[in-house]
Image (tube, rainbow, N blue to C red):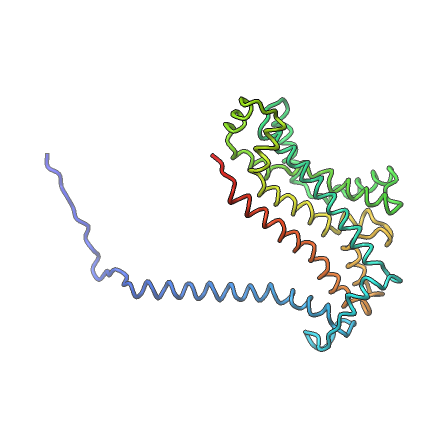
Length: 303
């Protein structure tokens, strides 16, 4: 049997790309990428810098002729928390901070509990429950605002300040357990052999959860804590529907009110100061959580 061997024939005039040409294209691609990233960074930083500088603007009226302020003062921050005749922003700030912290703790506990049950346990109606939670999660929460308001009103939680705080905590934390898919997906990557070995050593399900699962899932706990804090801290729609009077407002409603036509003339610079103050707890939370995230990623071993 004879085997015909054919060699590849190069096309006439075809040349391999030179090393110099490949280097030039690589450098050109890097330049274009860095220019694009620089433009995007400027587009992202300019509004942040403008709000920060506007918070120190001595001219409290908006729509000035210059983009950046020409005179600076710290009176906007001082009056923001001391001038309580029109609105008490300090009270709004502390009320929202309390709600966000409580909701953060409750949501982390709910999500961890539901995720552990869905990932590590097997029981009847497990899959129907997950499918139902997935389907309900496809609908935007704004669709239930009216129903939630009338339910809370029937319970008498929309008339007083303390009732409003309880209503917001119930609304924000009540549905957090249904948002378990991300945490469950992470727990599914943890080998079941760890659970079986711990149970053989005499551990209970609670000990498996607290001593094995929680240390490994610290990165996702950090993620859930940040999400659980930011939702009530930045939410406007549900807060606007539940809080009917200024005495019950959260910081998002307070900032919104500063831009109304009867306040914007004197509160515009204070609005910028309030926006800066609102970003401070989020920045602190990110810094604190990042440390735990890095330590957990360096120490966690799965497999």
